[in-house]
Length: 409
Image (cartoon, rainbow, N blue to C red):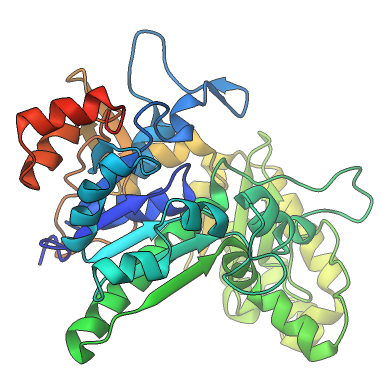
């Protein structure tokens, strides 16, 4: 089962990253994803020229990761849902689809006659999926959102990584950070709904909000806050767990960082000390039990910081590779792109762009039967309009008339 979604038809009326990322994952898994775009402007994300202060395109190349990543493997149809002439084609696409994906606001869905009731009248069995900012109900159901607002700021992550004395809250570590987590959530929900329809004959309406995804990612702290009935105190900038010096981040001599996560400190302490030349500390009674280690945590943290801080990242890596406890070096985006484990498992995948050049993208996390990702590029704007509409039985004369009327791109 290398492409478990083979044979599933997904109709996507969405833009930017949140819901399109779900369509990309479903396409990775084998679904035929047809993306409907405005026949004049296309997905609004195609119009982004700069991202986080950098050009979205390399000079002389058509490949743009902000388009490729959330739209790979799809077919693009330029179709104006605002014009009556395009309605028969849209309805036939709905009729032939298993899943309908959208992130448009309720008023837009109603205006374009693609809300739940509109789509279900055409295809009662379709799985209808809404990616929203704040959920389908409640005071903010009609409000627009991006992951920076609903997921990061309101969902608790920004506060969670911001020091009390900071002049401004910390920003997301990457563009579309919450969108991509939310897209993967939607893809999993679609898979569950398809299985449920097969098992019970009943279809589903799915709503995944960026706010709910944000709360889910922060649930460790949110659940504790509900247990205590108040906001949690900030733990400060120190990353070590209370009483455990073998957790948290430590700076190496060359300015790089090591992240330790040895959650059973007394188990790993003697080995760590011997590897890093702290033989006396390995048998020191102050660090022999959980209770005594907690009581002398500051001294233990200072020993670990000194041992790591006097060595380069390469030296620490060589020593920690001999240890049993979990650890990792702190990597930047370029290092992640070249991570040997990601590459060995096919999670950095090659893709051939529209110009025939080989590019690379991060593959979606789930791998089936150890198969390669086999990514296909994102469609050019409205690239498959004629192809898809011909599959619906629309002939050349009607295609010409639809183009003349501005109904298709």
